[in-house]
Every structure is written in C-alpha cells, then in structure tokens.
Image 1 (spheres, rainbow over the protein chains, first blue to last red):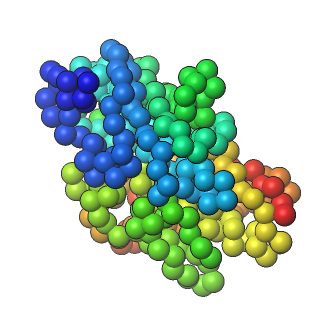
Image 2 (tube, rainbow over the protein chains, first blue to last red):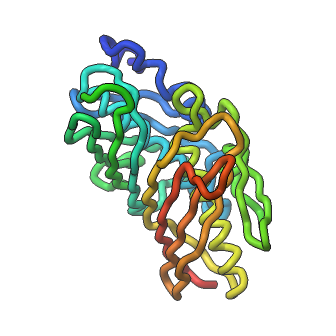
Length: 145
Length: 126
C-alpha cells in the first residue's frame, strides 16, 4: 500500500514531506493505525556516519522519526493541519545494523489546541529490540486542533 | 578532517572559523521539507555532523578516540528557508567517558539560530 492510499481522506497530506529530504533518504510508507504511522528507511551507504563500522549516521534516523511522528499527528487529528517540530529528543540505544532497513514507529499520544505530543521507537528488524526512542512536540501553525 | 558519506548526502562542507570547524549546507531539493523550508531532520543531521566535528577536533588534541552518540535533544526556533544553513558545535565538557556538546544552526545571522541541540556522547579513548 502506498502512502496515498494509507492517508486517503486527509486532503493534502500525501504531498507533505515525501518529496525533498525524505525522498533523498529513500523513506517510504510501511504501516499505520488511528494514531500511529510506521515508515521505512532502507540502508544506503551514502548515509554512513562511521566509515569504520558502516553504521548509518543518527541524522537519517532523526529525520525518519520526525516524519513518522508528524504523520501520526495527522492520523490522530484525522486531517491535515500545518505544523512545525517544536522539539524532538532521540535516545540512541544501540547502533543500527549495517545493511538493515530501519522501521520508525511514530505515535501521537496527546492532541491539544496548539500542541501535539508524540513518541516513538525505531528498530531494524525486531520491534522488541529498538535502536532508538523518541519523544517530542509539534506546534500547529494555523487554527488549533 | 574527513567528513563521513552522510555529510556529502546533506551537501555539507567543512569551513574553519577561528580554528574551529563550521559546517555549511546549501539549500537543495535533497534537504527540502515542507515547501520552502529545510527539513528538520536535515537540520538535525547538520547539527550532529557539526557536533561530532567539534568533538573530534578537540579529542584529536588529546590523542583521539571513538565517539558514540547517546542522545540528542533539538529545539527548532525558526523555519530554515531556501538558503545556506551553517552549524557549529561547542564541547561544553569532555570527560574520560562522556562528552557534552551543544550545537546551533543559523542562516543569515548567527545570533538568531534556527535550531539548537544538546547532545551526549560516549567516548572510547584511543
């Protein structure tokens, strides 16, 4: 299933954040629920941050989680509303394994008038052994939720 | 100092200011987020590359070592527009095992950052 099908009924959403940087990183739709979205980040050698080990940089994982939690906010909201990342914290539990696709699970656990609260995990094959945990907030730019 | 492949993906190059590394990332489609703005993950990527460059630079003076990221907390203050973004890291503490680094990213005016980050790194000394 493509992102367009997954997000049907939320006008404008499918165009957001999947061109540009997300496209350059190869980020693609993976799965979704009412208040969560999973995206996939395939391994690529041009994302390597440590040449000695072949481990990808933390930046692409941050981008993956920023996008997954952003889309999760719209899933919970049920419509598109422009918003901006206010802050995001990522704990890197262990390095991602070279050659493995990283799955980013983003969840919106609270939605307020002007702020959405998000959290998520990233794993590279086993959801019970995550490589990163994230928490953050988004700020709505127009009218409130 | 040699930058990792990921820095090339971002289009980032190394500049030096007063003997300290500064990373410069021109605007391109490859770092675009919502229309007209740099993607937050690309800004964070640049902040992390800048933080590690600052840390490697200081660590090199003490014999070098491996750097492993523990966490990053990023505050986004302004949207990054369609122009060059620069970032620099400041090592606030370099201990035997842990380094604390702050980094900020700016566009036209260094005094008006578009994002800032705090990062903790595990150090394995050479």
